[in-house]
Image (cartoon, rainbow, N blue to C red; front, side, top):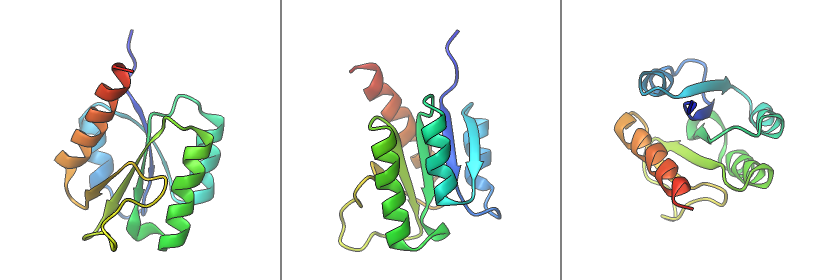
Length: 122
């Protein structure tokens, strides 16, 4: 039996829209509210498929270093960054695989689904 993908959300406690969208789409979720805990969860759980980081949850440098640390723990992990607007510089921060605008649930689900399709063809 195939299990649903496991996604870790590093989000602000007050934001539940992302969580609801992913649950409704059938994803298994874990949540954390601190960057250090997100890395620790990924170290101890090798079944994690993706991590969704909320840009508003941390300052830029801390967030980017979290993405880099997550990739060191698990190279194949999909790291999605939710942003409020456009990224400065126009390029993805190191360790981040894709960027999705806040409140774009369809975009987030598409990114997660596309990553699963790419993984299946490797």
